[in-house]
Image (tube, rainbow over the protein chains, first blue to last red):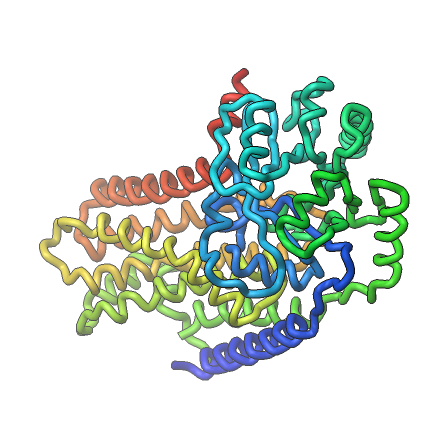
Length: 284
Length: 195
């Protein structure tokens, strides 16, 4: 073993230990929101599937991002939320779900335990979600992923994603979704405004989020609040959608929140660790 | 002070390095053969976790490595298939697998590179798809190394080695495609696009 390799190993160990200490301290210091306004990301992808992180790490990442609840929604499967569900790694509520991916629509089913068949038409899929005690949310309802635009289809929904990272880069699509939400509200006044990250790898979870006004801090509490439409959607850039009084409350929470940390130190340690790992691989 | 690792020499001079390695008088052991797959699992765990969270915590990397450890297991199975009935005659299987896994560097460096790029990209830039196109580099590079492994370690003729390398790459790509097919719900999307 050459001195170069020993140095790389020492740097790697130091960077990992420093990053671990900082992270564990931050996680321990993080307190969940104590009032009835929870922050949730209701559309998150996980491993095994097209998400990078398994349930255990998603729970920790949700805590880092100040979330109180997440819904794991992989495409046409409900394995990921059950993968390792015997261990909780933080006090973040994890709700099982599915992103029902069909040729005509993408539908988030939150609070279900059994897979919903993607071949079902929208009303039948929603009926099956309700039979299982879940809620049905139109996922990123832009033209490529959401074709049902008639009043009957909008009336069966419990919620609609009005804030999603893809809309930030596509203003016409965002306008289209806001118009669709207005039509959904006309068809069903209690339809919930939802903000979700649809996190796979990047942008991270909680980038867009939903403020959920619950009566109890539990999966049931979150699902009931969505059914009643007691939500505010946030796009992460200051735009809030929902009932004006609840928007005011959410805005007060945002204004009172401490500034978001820059994450400079964790990123620096992560960079050093990756470079040291690469150096270990190429040196003897 | 600085010397290139075996994996680095295999990546740059595969024929010469593999020839040198098979003439080393070294006893084979499964423990040594499985060290690189373990390192590969840690590399995948570290790169996926750091890409998604920006944090290099030992706990998070451990969780990632445990979750993605099925990837080196599949590679091990693929490697055993590649080393089946070598023309040179019975070779110690543990030694052959140890040498086969020395071809890991292109993919390992690619994963670390992608993690570094995504770590410092602004949160708003979402075009991960463009980075996925760069997988062509580790795929082709690994193909060259595996072909060289087949010629020098397994004793295949150049033609046989090309076939074995192609079958190996075909299996790797088929497994990757199947995983993606199921993970992203590709079939309904194809039906939607066709209709």
